[in-house]
Image 1 (cartoon, rainbow, N blue to C red):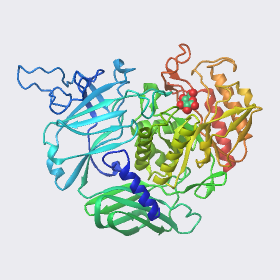
Image 2 (image 1 turned 180 degrees about the vertical axis):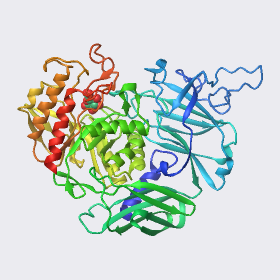
Image 3 (image 1 turned 30 degrees about the vertical axis):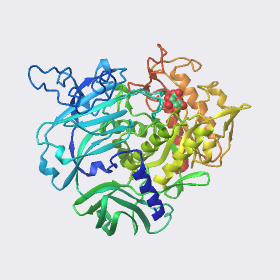
Image 4 (image 1 turned 135 degrees about the vertical axis):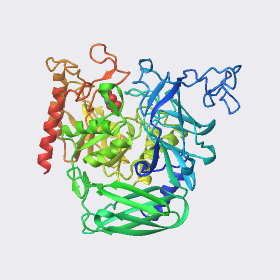
Length: 608
Ligand code: GCB
């Protein structure tokens, strides 16, 4: 990154919608986990937040649910309280934890008591860090508000003033509200279940008072093929410093010092003999950063990704993306995925398919997923939930989208697995929408100019020809389209004489294609919902893809597993589930799985 780009990047960070700047590399810091059982109150009327005149309660209102629930004396009237009678696991969505929550959308108050050794706060700063909570989160500690965050899939943190922390019985209350609104992101309508709750880990993060807040370390774009490999990046402190930062890759016996005057600095070095990260060889190196009292450790893979003409090029060689889409859900348990074990479960299914790429739909997934993808060598498409119709004419909505984009990129910019940032899915073409989406593409590039930026577009049929001419395609690095020929239009054999007209000479990627089948339901291939129909769909699609022009660079069919969707209400075949999974929700492979796997095996052989 050159000085100008660094300046633009820091400018965006300091002017974003977010509050306390995000700390990165959470696994590499000193943490105190607050995961576990939290007590809760379900509050559909938001009685703990608004008074009876619907005004937000203030510190004076003793009956605000963030104030102590202990009565002052026996005459005191308390109409709320936290109790072990009602607990929820954190992390975890609430919908899957008690049948009464199955379709709940609204407010739940979470409460956790914890003790804290105040010596830890001497010369240090303490932050409260949430991996994610869906959607609006108001956070209170010992009766004081720490802050509010909106966005259901990205991390956020608040600094805790040391005067607020107590040795014993800190009273942490978190209000989470997952109601949907037309001016939020996503908006009212999605084809997935809107799981609510504190869905990811909660930690206290202890850092020195001057600390490395964020950094970027990667192989420089365009540095291949070359003998020495250029590593470049930048480092950012929480405040201005005059420090020497030591940078080490012990396995390579590599050590350099970086001088930082001010709050940030860009750097680059040449390193010889570095092994490149790739799906075949997901080599990672331990990287150590230290400055003053701060010491950080990360595991980083080094690779380059770029678009050259009509190809996607990884480490200097064209690559075909053998992908699959997935939601962040464990279908068998009807819940959000959050843990390392969940990430391993999902990514093992990806591997079984012989895929080398996963599209994390339709929102940023938890950090275990992207870190696991790094270590398993799976390329990743990561996306913000700018999905279908949102309020494109609203400047606040654009600010919210930019905030989510920034939080996604900030958390994961050091993950080699991530090669694509997507700024949205199937947004309807109009001038105001294209202006909005173009801004997001530009923001993504300003935040990270080393990866591919795209958005999943739709096709339209003009005189029988499948046409890709969405004006947004002009601004994205690759043209990604969702196409369902044979499911939402026609029958699978329509693929045989399908004609395609694509306006842009860029790599073409099928970001979705798919058909629904109820696992275990067998019939002839013309019967909708049968595994045989879905298998036929994949056969015809694969045959069509084999005829696509040479800029066809990959696909991520829809979808790995069946998933919960309130829009899917056929009582015989759906029952609240979108059934386009290649695995059914019991984990069984459907027939179509084998068609796609065979295609992927063939492509892999051909590319070798
Ligand atoms: C799409 C959407 C995806 C849906 C899928 C479907 O085009 O991008 O979110 O779930 O189609 O199953 O209809």
